[in-house]
Image (cartoon, rainbow over all chains, first blue to last red; front, top):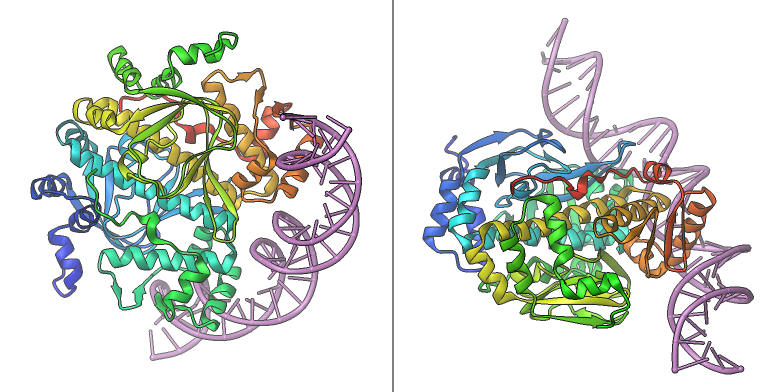
Length: 253
Length: 253
DNA sequence: CGTTAAATTGAAGATCGTCAACCAAGGTGG
DNA sequence: CCACCTTGGTTGACGATCTTCAATTTAACG
């Protein structure tokens, strides 16, 4: 709406741009297909931080595409403990899986102010009937989400606390690079240490200590919602980071 | 091949039976669609325990459907630590996601002797071009895998060691019920405590102690490849188990 | 019957969590 | 405009859960 935020402005004109861009990293997407996706978005909405977008169990008839911002999918234990299973950024189709699941078994909420495009499920059904290749690309995007989940499971299950956080930073850096949201080796990450704890399966107190260690080791700084990587190679080594799980190559799918 | 194992024999005649059955739990699948799936399986093979079925990075041109047995998908850290991200049982399409990913970022291996049906990717492509509903059902099955992964992430990230193992037992009990592989409150689980440790993100030593605790509390016994549940309600309570994440309702998809 | 992998148990130690206090920042209402 | 309140960040002390190391037993298998 405002015209002084250039990146957002482009996004407002083409809310589906980031998604198309990311699909094109993985395979060719024709302009006709891209247009079909563009027409699938019914409306765009700005949502403030801390809002629940979908509560577990709720029936769905539309899916949400992130235009900009940060969204988490999370599950809670009955004792109140929370685990974030995914963090989504611009160009991610947060609950595309809701199209077939019909309800989600987890919650979806904003970690930061976020702009969202809504895609009615009937339009997805239509794509599935008429656009086999485009449908495969959408399926693919849920499969990549799944691969990211698996890598996170490796983190939470087997990596040390420092390595877990280092890995998260490497991953976000790589994923945000794809949508031009990094500036050199820095990127905006307007989320709390509590959020990071909930992703990493740690407490916020321990996250705080590990962030200090990463800073002391000269690897990364996370302060005032800004991540600054000082030694990418060192960070990747500590994290045992290998970007191949992000499937950044173009292949006929 | 042999004719003295009735369950397996049925499976040999209809290797895709379990899959169709499980899809039908989630939505109607016509007999025509079921036949198409049956024809998609090119050949069936028996694989012994401890075999690597797919190594990370390997190019794929077929996917594997489990007819009977137990298969794990796992990732390794460079220091040798292993995390199993999924355990698959009869009727699971272990690497259906390989159809679109073209290579896997993780390994797939047998935890027990397993019978596998191979489905060439070209037949899946054909289904995707000609059978939109059937394709959505296949997509759905990868989405349910994903939901299981998320629940496991909650376990590994936030549940205590005992609760993690209790939850795994509840899950396997429920999933094996679907394919008639339980006998009352017991089921065969021919895997090691090391495997359980790799699923739960624990060491086998600690798994051993937690299994003893579950036994001492009168909840479950896991011995000689057999799980016997003594108090399902108590086990589910300890595990904070809620089967809704398995999507066991029929819906038009 | 010997060999190997897995299960079991104990003792000691490390990592991470809990509790608690304090600080910093940002927003709200008087 | 500033006290006040809330949320998040930071640090220390202590403790619990889980790991590591190591030894022994059991089971499976040729």
